[in-house]
Length: 160
Image (tube, rainbow, N blue to C red):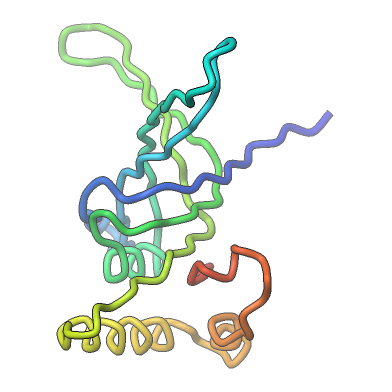
């Protein structure tokens, strides 16, 4: 039997992304998202709220894009896989951490205020930077699609 390791999660960035490079020069970007879950418990008609925090890791060109496009509070959808790191600390205790390695990232659009001219500049810069990373016409076409009826088109898609 084959194993499946796939994750799709939506939430908001908790803080600005942190980008660094490996010794070989590969870009790595890390950020954390908060994802809300609402549920009813028993006969109570009110919804309870549960918040989960998830560490995301991106590599290469996707890491550079996430570093440029992501910012605290921005809505994001991530498709990726789970990765578990295990290590022994200086105190001799075993530790483990699970993170999501992103393979595809989509951003919610940022709506500008009518009187916010700085937001206009950010929107233009955002559009230009995605085209800059799209290497082929096919890559560029995935960003210029017609709006469809489902909510997934409210996200800007970035895959490498």
